[in-house]
Length: 164
Image 1 (cartoon, rainbow, N blue to C red):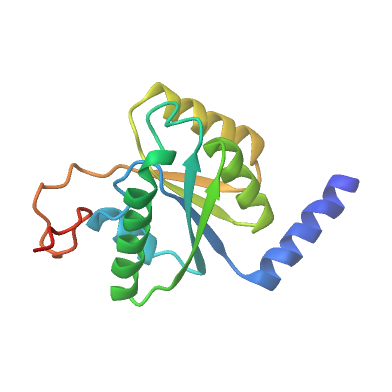
Image 2: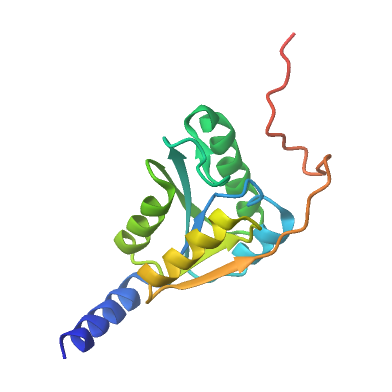
């Protein structure tokens, strides 16, 4: 009986806030054309999450503490590309364990969906299984992204230009 009441409360809160989609930046491919197009097709509020994992990239995803600038540039590039699709988003930077920060923010922001770039690593598979187990009321979708060419046509680079 209490579970039924809790579900009704969550439904009312979701209706009040509208649909929210959480995009954790884990693969460093979130600014790809394919993935940005998928995000742009989502209705509701988009939340980009960059986790600076002090555990230094356990499992090969996320950003280690020494990669703050690279992660921030990826987030900014993704936001700029989404704006070209007339899609606004909020960005959040968190320090700590990648898995727990995704779970906590998803619950705190009452997201309806988590959208991830598919990765072929055991650690990503474990992360996905744990999120599905712990975040049962949230849709979790992965998107397979093809490898991008080295040179991008957008003119946006993750590398700093050399100053004269």
